[in-house]
Length: 117
Image (tube, rainbow, N blue to C red; front, side, top):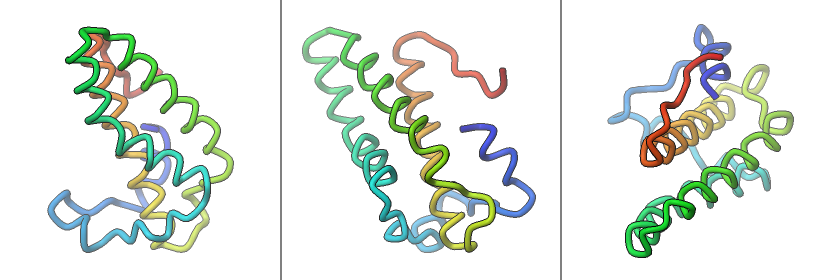
């Protein structure tokens, strides 16, 4: 996900977090793979609450695997480069948001997310 952001950096730059709500049209993310990732991202707070309540970190680990699987199956369908600017911006936002959530889940599991391999 970091590489998607790096590869598209010169042409497509996300606005600052305070401006994203008005600058990014998430209604353009209509593909089934995009909707699957959005649904998983929306489940994250509940996953963390469930893990805290049951004291089972495997809940977060399972979520992270599901999110990774959804993202890896979307690489070829949800292209950023070569798309209209508003679609590319929405898809880049989706990948960056998924990267942030996955990084948060990894840190809860005491793992350090990598920016580059």
